[in-house]
Length: 221
Image (cartoon, rainbow, N blue to C red):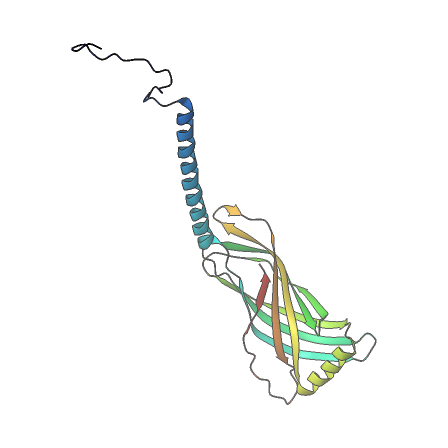
């Protein structure tokens, strides 16, 4: 190269051409990143909204209490199987603690048990509780006679409790309920409530102690 001449530039085929424009594959990857971010944001907001909705309207456990009870007859004949005469009345209250939901009680019954042997089944009236922490109280009377399938230990327990005048009786409340939110009504759900009662038999000349209000345990709702 002579002095004063411009330097010569040679073409190098191995040199990469630096083009600033993006290739189609790069654009597609950028689109996928944006789409994934949008999906994640939507999913987070959807989960948060579902949790908030669950906290607001999810039905709280129904509150059931036996406010009063009276046992005026409870006699067992030593037949095989044993024959039981009974007269039991209770006042039971249902309270809806969920303010946003109403509850339809479509079917309801009370089953009475002594020593795991059922001796009575009575249908209860159907009703509706709105979502304003409302309460419904009803009276159920269970009276009559029934063959009970008590074993020998159950008969002995009856004899012992008959001496004291106090009997441990369990009342199970079974039913079907539906929940109402605005104009939407759910399908039927099973309701099962256990009410353990300590009852004093009403006898002539014996002072009857005041019945203590009993909280029932809601197993299914």
